[in-house]
Length: 226
Image (cartoon, rainbow, N blue to C red; front, top):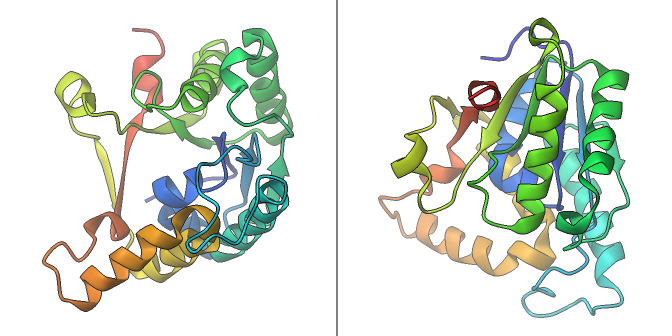
């Protein structure tokens, strides 16, 4: 899957959004030599966690998360990381046209055949939703024949009930270690969770963390003109 993409553009608001949602698919694509650009809108400087045990402060967290993001990109094979400089937990208050233009500029520069972002209405966090809306509108304004395919991640509790199961599910077992490495790179936010995950894997849990072995997506294009 995704073997013929000319360019992939990933747009998320926070460091670690990509690790949870699509690190495996990204690694599979970079392994094939497909260029991937990641536009991360903020440094996640308002993240709730400061490490477990704590190793960051409110003052040091932005630079720590910057370094973590770079490390995660190494795990995913991303060579083009764009840190867009917006402030965490304020994207929902940015002017809509400013956000749409930001995405439009990236699309015009990179001409991606594939994009990855959140699914509007089903991504929980206000920054997630604002990002998803900007991507949706930027792509919707394009001529239909020129639109990239947009894979969208939806995980609100009502997602399956309202829009059904994601039509695309990708087996990432072959790059699970890379996904784990990307998650571990974001240690200030994920250390506690990854420790619990490791315990369950080591204990032979029947879950064996299926979320580490597959990634699922909606196709945002299906929602553009509804």
